[in-house]
Length: 342
Image (cartoon, rainbow, N blue to C red; front, side, top):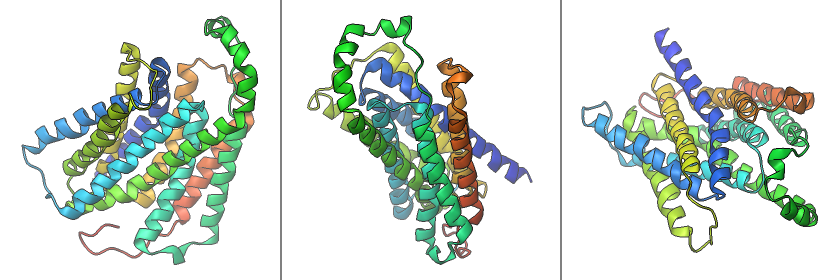
């Protein structure tokens, strides 16, 4: 019983961290006016929380062992996590808002998670009609969330401070490029959706490959983040002509987002350690996270309830119901041998 409660607590920790991640990261990106600089800060936070701290703790000893298979799968999980973070940052950079970008990501990720788990377990033959209906619900809910996303209110004093003349002169151009920007937002969102949907099954293989170790897979995730989210973006700042700037508020918000991501990764590992499987852990996380994301976004932006369409809320509910259906009727595969990943 205690193990189940511990697993639920770990799932709740991950859902809470990843639910708050998008709104917090949005503040960091807005303050630095750059898609790369917040990504660097996220990578730095992962370096501290997922590499430095675990290495210090590992010196005291922990069960498990370093294996080629475990390291490879865990590094791939880190790559998936980092690419997902990049997808979220790009979606926000192209004009997307956390209140609908994150529900779309969290709505599609459990579908990817289930399909990849089925492929890795060779259990596609177990796909049943209720499971396919759940996929349809997720897609329908995601489209509803996108169509009825909350719109900004009428421009007030705050909006007037952001170069009103420049905005008026750019209005025709923005109308011409609206469809193009929407496509960019959707492609970036899809990158995050696929990457984070792949994260759970891949990480589970990595942890199983290292004989149930909790700290070793986290270290590998941190290494991937450091390479992809710190070294690469720093090298690209000048060649890509990044026009943003390092600001104290932007750095702090982005570091906070990276810390939330890293703690969420730890929560996932703990859930797997306590007996959870990707088929169960990840859809529950992705079902709770968008609700937390929406409540956090509304609270941070002080959005009045009247600005939220009931159709938007209904779309979120449909996504959650679809994700739960995918979870309940998803293929489980054959029981794995002892010590082998599920």
